Structure formats: C-alpha cells, structure tokens
Amino acid sequence: MAKVEVTTRGAVREVVLTRADKRNALDAEMLSRLEAAFTAAPPTAERVTVLRAEGPVFCAGLDLRERGGGQVGASPIEAMLHAIELYPLPVVAVVQGDAIAGGNELALHCDFVVASETARFGMSLAKIGLAPSWFLAKKLLEVAGPVGAREMLLLGDLLPARRMAELGLIYRAVAAADLEATARAVIQRLAANAPLSLRAMKAVLVRAMTFRDGIGHADVDALVAAASASADAREGVAAMLERRAPRFEGR
Image (tube, rainbow, N blue to C red):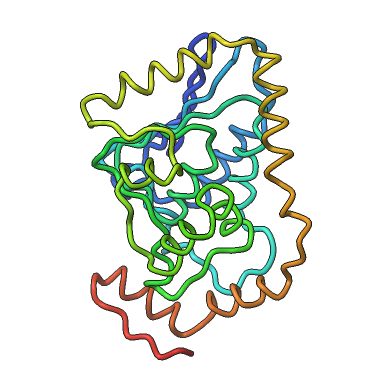
C-alpha cells in the first residue's frame, strides 16, 4: 500500500498519510508523493484539498533514519511544503494527533488547521541538536509571531491544540469526538464558495506572506548546516532513537 493515498470525491480531494506504524514519519517516498500531489494543477471540479493521517499520530516529522547531515539549500521537505503553500486552492489539515517538527510544519503550511484537543504541536529540534532552516523558521514567524516562535523553537515544548488555537496558530481545536464534524463543516463551506474567488484570494495571501523570501540568509543557512552536522546532532538523534536523554557537549 502507498504511504500517501490521494482520492477525489466531487469538489473535495483528500491526501492521506498512511504510514501509521511509523507515526507517519516522512521518508523520501512520502515527501516525493506529497510534493507531486500539490504540484499538479487541480482539476476543474476541485474546490478544496484535505490533508489528514491514519493512526493516533498526525506526523512525527522527518524519518530520522534517513536524515543526512549538513545540507545547505532547499531540502525535499522544503520543496514539498512550498508546494502546499503555493497550491492555488485552500488546503485544510485535519489533525487527530501529535504534529511534531516536520509534522508541525506540514500542518501549519495548510490554510486551515482543525485539530483534536488531544493533539500537540511543536518543534523539538533543539532537544536533539538540530535547527530548522530559514524557510521553516520563517513560516513559524509568519503564523506565530516572535513570541510564539520563540516558545516553539527555543523551548522545544509540545503545545496542546487548545494553546495553539489561543495563539492563533491553528483555526480550531475541538473535542476528539467533534473533530470530523467540525472539519466537515469547514470543508463544505469552502467547497461552496466561488472557485475563482478562492484562487484569487489564495494568490493574494501567498504573495503577501512571501515577502521575507528576499531577505539574505546565507549566514543563517551556514549556522543551521553546522548544527545539523555537529556531534551534538548525532548524539541527539541517537538518543531519541534509543529513548534516552542526550548528552550534549556543544561541538
């Protein structure tokens, strides 16, 4: 079975992560399939795309077993997230469980996030010696502002969905039993709107949010790459996979 399933019913397309046994951790195949799903032009009948996941976890982020070190420049996850952000029609994430690191970014690059109150969101990279790229950190600044971005990045704590809604990072946080009904209501409202209006408004929003792309950040990329290639990063990833506390030495 494919790790990402795509189906269309009338005006609504669904993209589903189906790697529940691995907490929907994103491997190379999934990144490629997700990018392809959001790079292709939407069919005439489509009005909205829904992103959801099977199992108790929405997405645990990148598969650490495939992690490379010290990469500079656009990565496969950046290309995939950029495709979601630029998709010409609204994208709704239905988050039933934890969305961590790359999973958090996956949700926040959608236009609407409807989440169960049992879900948690966060960027725990500082706890394993890694750092987000300029592109990923920029998104947190856009949706969370400086205070919220500091809470997510520097502390590295997972924030409950209710807290995310209070900060304005996600659209709604509801009881688990109400998740599907709430998501369905949002999806139906979007699908009923004028498609040319949706496309025009999405284009305006995307253009307004990409002004930071022109800011020079080569020095930031170098710092991120150094952290990713460090001994601390190797120790942090190993500690997470071995389910123990990391021993960081600042090198």
